[in-house]
Structures are given as structure tokens and as C-alpha cells.
Length: 184
Ligand SMILES: [Zn+2]
Image (cartoon, rainbow, N blue to C red):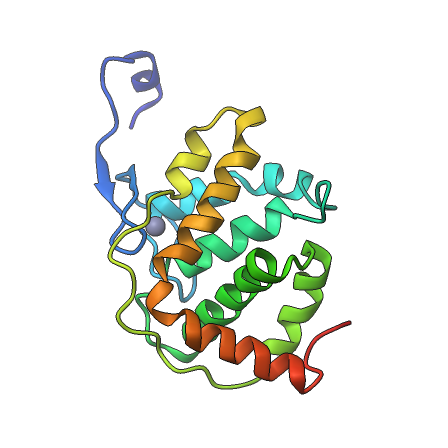
């Protein structure tokens, strides 16, 4: 795109579907995450929310931390890579969603706990969900005041989409908590 192009608002940027989360995202070239196979346009939508996400830190009434929900949901929606770091990432972020949605754990608890969860092997969870009802695109498109609600919906949609593997994820979480692998 050349500098004058932005003024031609009738020209919409081309879009492409992220092969991982299924979101329609800008068809751009750009950096991608080291091991999450997101489309560059998908990763750009996520990283553009960095400041907003940081501003959510500290949580909301009831201890729900929208920033942690966003990180967990995004990671769990990008699970196409069988490489060890990505298997770990998907597993611990799903465990964190489980801890929040089924056990009411706070964002602060999840941030502390996840660090202790990564030092082990997690098998690849297959099949992975073919699509997700709420994606980073919905979060990016939402006006600021509505955005926390969309992230909450993204967290619930992400956890729900992985329902085939809930028993495995719950078992990982229960086992690690029984061994004291989590803060109180
Ligand atoms: Zn994506």
C-alpha cells in the first residue's frame, strides 16, 4: 500500500482466513509468532490489542482478568503446530481457562500458576476444533466498552470448542494441583 491509498476508502484491504482460528483477517505480510501458526494478519490484530490488554491487568470484580482470558483464548485457538512448545502452550492455556471458568480462579492466580505448569510434557490434543464462534477479529472490531464482554465470550467459546478434550484437560489440572503444582 502506498501512502495515498488510505484515503481511497472504497478500496477495502483483501482478507484471508486464518488457517488456525478461522477468523477473517487482513491479507498482509508481517511478523508471526515463533511457534503459534497464526496468519500474519491475525497476529497483527492480536498484537495491536497489546496496550488495551495491559490496561485490563488487575482484574475486574470477581477476579476475572480479561487480559489473561485473551492470552489463553488466543493461544488455545492456534494449536495447529505439534511442536513441543506449542503443545505445552495449548495445554496450559486450556488448563488456565478451565481454572477460571470451572473453578473461579483469579487472573493473578492463573498468571502465577501457569509458570509452574510448563515444565512437563503434554500430548498433542487431536482432533482440534475446526472453528471458533468468537475470535480475535470480534475482539478487535468491538468498541472499547463492549470489548471485555467479547473477550469473555471468546474465552467461553474457546473452552467450549475443546469439549472433546475436557476430561484430559481437567485431569491435567487436577493432577498438577494435587501435587502442589499451583499457588494456594
Ligand atoms: Zn488466527
